[in-house]
Length: 474
Image (cartoon, rainbow, N blue to C red; front, side, top):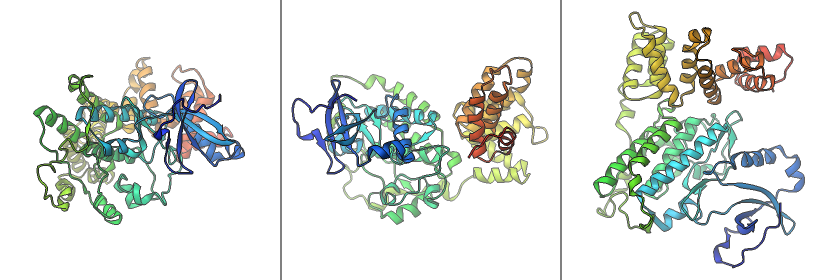
C-alpha cells in the first residue's frame, strides 16, 4: 500500500479514541482514510486463521456502499495499521447524542442500513452486534456498517459473548438471551435491527433505566421498549406509524413470526418513496439537540419510569400461537394446524403463509387442495425471503420442468433457499451442479461447495454422496 500521509491541516478530531485503540486520520491517494493501529504482527497476519478470516470478511464486504470500506493493512512507524474509509461524523450514536436527526432522514438512514444488511446476508455473513454505535456516519449522512469483530459466516460456529454481554444484551434476541450458546441466526439479526430502529427513532440506548439482569428476563417474557411518539405534524405522524409497524414486525418474541430483511427493505422503501418529497437541500437534516419532541417527554415532565416499557398483550394471551400450530401438524392434528396457519397468514405472517401454501398444495385436509392458490401463497412467502417457502415453491414447478419449462425459475428459487441455509436446498443444488442435471452445465467445484454446506448441517443424502465420492467435508 502507498504511503499514508498526515492531513495538510491538523485538526483536533484527526485522532479519535484513547490509546491504544485510537483511530487516526491520514490520506491515501488523495482520499481521507482512518488508520487503526493493531498489535497483530506480520506473522499472525499470515498464519493466524482467525485473523485471516476477519480480514477476508472485511475485504469481501468492501464492495458494498453501505458497509465501511476496508483498504487493507499498512504500516505506521513500523506498527501494523488497518486502513478504512474516514467517516467524519463518527458513530450514529455519537451523532444522535449531539444532534436531533429529522424524521425523514431517520427513514433514509434505516433504509440504507437495511440494504447493507441484505448485502451481508447475500455474502452469508451475520454481524452479531447491530446497534447505532456500530454504524459510522459520513459528512453527507451516509451510514456505514462497521465493527465486524464478532461477525461470522452463517455456517460458522456461533460467537459466545463474554465481556461484551453486559452491553450487548440490550439488542439481543430473546432466544439468544435464553441460551447464550444457542446458534445466532438471521432471525436474531433482524431482531437486533428492530431494536436499532427503535434506538434511532428515540435517540437513546434501549432499556437505559433497567439493570442488565432485569433486561434479560423482561425481553424473554416479551417485554419491549414503549413506542410512543411526541406531538408532530400529521405527515410526520403517518411516517411514524409506518416506521413503528416495521419495528413491531422485526422484534416479535417468536423468531418464526419476525419478518425477513427483504420484507423490511420492502416496507422501508415504500415508506421512503412516500416521503421523498420531504427532502429539501435548503432545509437542515440535523437540528440542535432536544429540538424534537421524540417521545412526548417535552410535553409531560413527570413520566413514570415504568411507563417506558411495555409487555405486549398478544404475548401473554396469544390468539393462536404459531408454534402451537406447527406442533399440531407434527402430531397429525391437521385441522387444528390449518386453523392456526390460516389465522396467521391472514395477518401477513410469512411463515404461516408458507404452511398454508403447503396445506393447499399437498392437501393435508380432506376437501382442501387448491394447488394454484397454494403455489401463489408459497411464492408470496418465498418473495418475502423465507428459505423454506423458496424451496417448496421451487418444487411446485417440478411438473412443468419435466416439460422443459421454468428451469431458470426453479434454479433461482432453490439457490435463494440454499443461500438462506436450507440444507435440503443446498443438497439439491449441489447435486444438480455436481451431476449436471436439468441441462445445467456440470460444475463439480460448485456442486461440492453446496454439498459440503448441506453435509455440515447433517443432511444425510449430502453426507452419503460425498462419502461415496471420497470427498471430505469436515
